[in-house]
Image 1 (cartoon, rainbow, N blue to C red):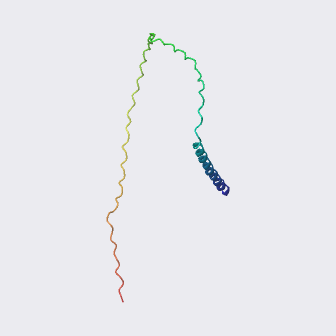
Image 2: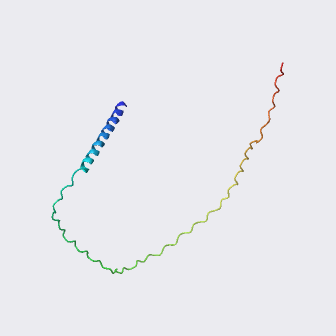
Image 3: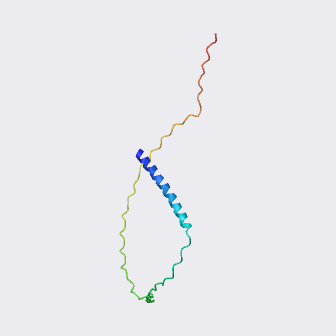
Length: 112
């Protein structure tokens, strides 16, 4: 466990140090004088694009397909009706009394 903590600590130190170096390198790049311009190089010429052939705009007439007539569906047999017995009645829930019964208080012992 201690090895893992040491490894994490060393990794965080290395990351922090690399961040400083990156910031310094960026600052040095911003302080450079402007770079000299590159002489004009001849630009390559591309061959002309081939022409796109035109497609015919008329649609050829196709014969319409004829579908055979659908067969008639078979009829479903009638299902006999089922009579279910009546559901049992729910038992009544007991009621919770809302009044608090009074307890008889004992009289204090006689004083001497």
